[in-house]
Amino acid sequence: MKLNLNKFYIVYNPWSRAKLSDVFTGRVSDIDFLYRISYGDFLKDQIQGIYTTEEVAALVAQKIWDKSPFNYRRLKDKKKEPYVKPQKKTRFKEFIYGLEALSSTYGIAIQKIVGVLIFDEPTPITYTPDQSSGSLSPQWEEEEKKEDTSQQIKEATFNIKKFYIVFFPKQPVKQADIFSGQPYNLEDLISMFLGEVKPEYIEGLYTTKAEARQAANKVYKKFNLK
Image (cartoon, rainbow, N blue to C red):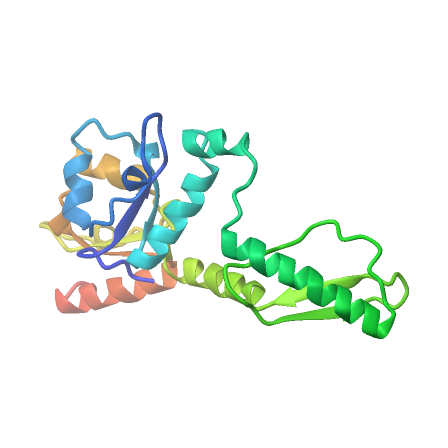
């Protein structure tokens, strides 16, 4: 993956007194923004990740916020009884009536139900029976959606812990100055910004060495470097 230096989304690690809107602002970021915050009161570990789509960035931010120790509302709500929407209660009662009728019709009783999941809306559900134990394992479409979400996050995540940088040439020019072949991380990039590197010196950030080398070869050719 080559990161679009003009359009990406940053998710931050939660901190004390932070809100979900602080973890992900929803704003588009670019390489110039990273350069500017490098000179402020910015800490390298403040950034949780960089993502190529707003949808995935918002999804990751929500997941992080839901588990954050600074999400005081979540911790407070944990002490309360879980809230069940009225329409869910109604559907649950109707489910019990239907289950009683079904059990009576077929002469099959479920001895004990440990946990009940009540979805926001009617959802196609199938059951896989275990003949030896008599247990039923439910399956629903949400499992597939979770897999799709995981793949979606993976495809839109730029690995800030290991990436490769290709630079534009400066005078005097050496190939190693354009592409060193070694991996960098976000901390390395910010340290470069604090040194002499400016955003306009960077041709691209790549997740794989092969992609970076291919881009570097194009730069060599463009500037007649051997």
